[in-house]
Length: 293
Image (cartoon, rainbow, N blue to C red):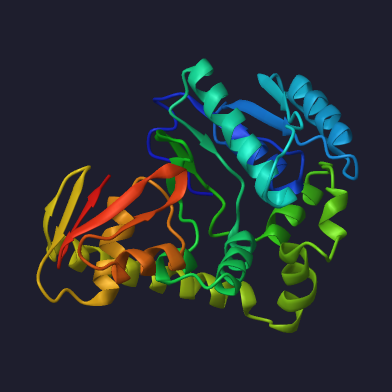
């Protein structure tokens, strides 16, 4: 387990789902003398055992003397996106809100090496480039609240290692019933693809590390090719390589661009305008210059 350097001098929370990984993370933190605030979010899907997981987390934290805050997703009319994406958005909003309320600098999450490997394959299927394929790393920012930190102490360990650790101590956990649903792409990777490839997790994580290094290198080159950049204007050096140009455009705009949106910006003729997410307009005002309108 690799904890953040300031975990004993600042206030941290821990995302507790009730599953094996997060229960192991909480107990390992306590053994290391670290006592985070626990946050549990009940996704409240009718076909899942969210109430069972919530009750388990309440009982576990009460027995350990750990402070626990529980949130619950409320179905919003007209919600769009997959079930997993809706759940994640609601959970992250809850985390951001409670981190601020508790005066925490960040949250410890129990993602481990298998999660990272699965995420790489999911992003590969979506057509992501090196930045996306590098998946998540040890640290990062909370979506929508980048000043709040995420840290993943178990990223160099596997799910099987957490299960074995808990069983050796006679500690129980709650298995999410949705984990057996093979219609969920992540579960199909976990239960069908990964067992066919003995080195799936280690190989995918090694690839993610290499991709992260290459993405960082390309980002530095894109920055060097940027002649002028403000919130309103982006001017690139003449004859900038298209790969670096796309990266510079994605870094410049305050929204996540799809590959199609990025290509549309690159293909604009001088004087043309295109719209991206949230009503944000971008106009090409010169051969190598774009402005927000």
